[in-house]
Image (cartoon, rainbow, N blue to C red; front, side):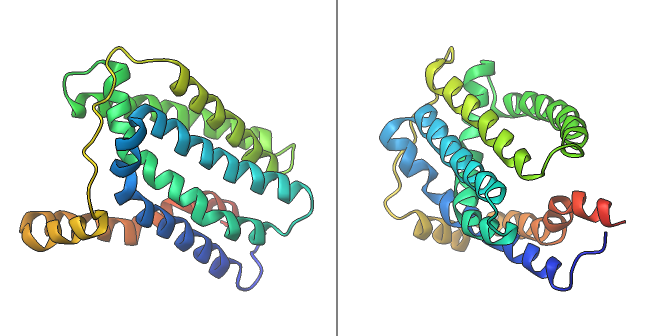
Length: 210
């Protein structure tokens, strides 16, 4: 089915709001974790993301226009996703009891890859028989289960509580201004996000259209 004129533009706006929410929230991840601890903070942002996507799914099932619901929820969902990233490495290291962060993240990546593969197939088969909005509701329920599991199940080693930065964004810009290697690393990451992130995010609608 060919998208309506302007549909890709609105989808691009949705992704922009989503990634903007991620960029604005991520520097504040240490601040939130310094107050409550990494595990409670991780559970909290997971719950916020679940509420955002669950609300969108329910609104769409209730007749609210799809793009309207998505655009309203995009910054909130993006902020939640942005803050989960910094926590995941510490959480995985705590639960996998790995000596190094790289080893823990590698294990997490393997498990996530299997979950993405199996989940993608199951979701594709399921959403051919039910409304796509139910996918968001199911995602919210599964995310809420993960948040509850993290909140009530203590790891063998609790993640270290990070130091609270005084001015998160100022610290980021100062680090970029004073570290040449960090600037090159940031440029590499930004270019990858600029060219690859939209394609990877839109892989399902692009494949459906093709």
